[in-house]
Image 1 (spheres, one colour):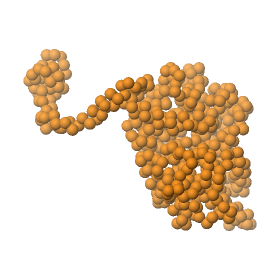
Image 2 (cartoon, helix red, strand yellow):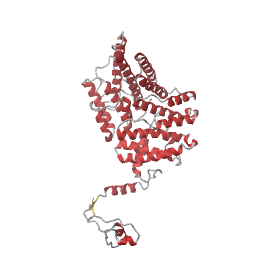
Image 3 (cartoon, one colour):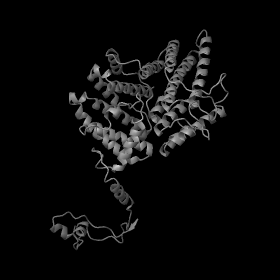
Image 4 (tube, one colour):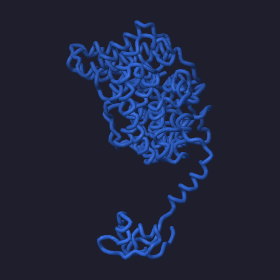
Length: 483
């Protein structure tokens, strides 16, 4: 804060020119003679204390960053370079550098850092996603404002790109559209906390249909198709709609083109597509037996798929312990293995929920309820077992509470979603709930303060829950829901 004394009564133009102002009401004569627009006069009651904190901070940051290179792009003239650089480093470190070969952004390594400055669309969209993620992780709203400006520029560049067939077929154009779908979900959740249809997925499907069969056997193209598959399935599940026919046709095109269907990621996402179709069918089907049969087939497929995952050291004993150990978790070789196991468990839990709902439909309306009671009992047992395994994958608080590997901020959000699923399905005994509460506290230690509000809601049972599990994933999940 700086005391500036009483403000001058002269107009701004006269003060700037250092000449005497006659202060006429309609505008001073000096400005009229110089053909200048008179800016008017300050009031004596105007503020005499000037807050120069932001100006001083900007000068210091500008001086520190004067020797650092600044990326060209729409944000570079409006944004302090240090903020954009921090956002880039944060995003790349969380999503790209240590991403496994099957991860959601593994194909980003092909595009970033850019080998050329001739890709304004991709550079602009990457900057927008950097800043939106930075806003979410650091609780910094101005970053989201700049991200939206950059996103608007990217929309204009996209319209220009798709007018040229050659440009529309490029990998970087499709990649930019996929990033737009990520940005749309992230920015809208941050602003409204609600789930909406993802408008860019249809465009990505149409671009892929234009690109021909070669993309499905190309490494980068195949990974982008799997990413699109995940985005489409989660969007449909969260909004309770069926898988679009255009996407099913694209998937059939990939199969006929010889896409590699042997990877666990492809096989898991194939099950996810069938599960999404089953969820939609279950809301209108009159045959509970048929729905239960299909759910059990998918559960068996997931069980077989889990045999391809790396093993882990389980602390569970036979018979099962009456409660979950408070601090000692199961031991996984790395975080990615832990995430993959839990993703399968979450999907199997959802299948058990479908079976339970269908059993409840037929009980009392069938000549023989014995089979429905047996299915209901078994599905309840399986749900409890799967939810317990999820809890045991995460340590509680305390001196012995640790994992043999580091968990990043982004990854802790995925752990939070896994715990949310377990918390909603386990029974109510106080000891079980206390164990989940301790594990949520462990996750809290890994998250930024800006994310504690979401965690606080999950720690209490009385908050308003979203419509379904997958809407919660879109709200708090920040990794790929795949293996």
